[in-house]
Length: 280
Image 1 (cartoon, one colour):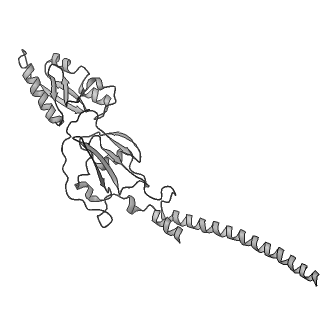
Image 2: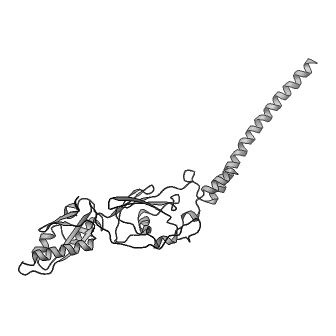
């Protein structure tokens, strides 16, 4: 019975792995705190900038790495592969990027939209004195946006869209396996030099309205294994099979032992009777 009880408690049920379940005493409620905010640039981020103008000379001067579409296609949207760092601008230790003809521009804590406006204003002021000046337009992309997963399907994965949800992140990883815990997912996030660890239950349907729904660049998602993994029990049928096999094996061993005992009793019992008869 102890074996059966342990096996049943280790069984991976739909309750343990299904998403979008109604909250109850086992699945938590989450307050409606959903608030998506644009990512604020941090030290070490890299930006890809494209400058548009009717003046071909200006276009060539600021877009030496090629067209925006070509570069982004080769780098992968939102993710730098290293070899294209030559075409991007690093946010240095002081929070600046060094842009041609403009110099240092402070961008730490700014969103990509805010950096776009800063560059358009700076370039507009600088180039307005050039004869035949035309309006400048700028595009700004963050090219090293990624998150990491440890504990299961470990690796570093690109954030391929501006707003990526926890479910999209898990789908990108290949979803969680049946022995990965959805109950206690830990999210490690660093912001403004402060690291926080948040724990949440991805099975609750209320997760879509909570602070855990959207992930941010450089997030680390830790996923642990649930009990039963090492034994490989993942269904009630497996429990029955394991229990039946264990009982059968026990019965087989018992039969062998009992046969041996009977054989010993028979052999030594016969020998004792003969000895006693000869003495008389």
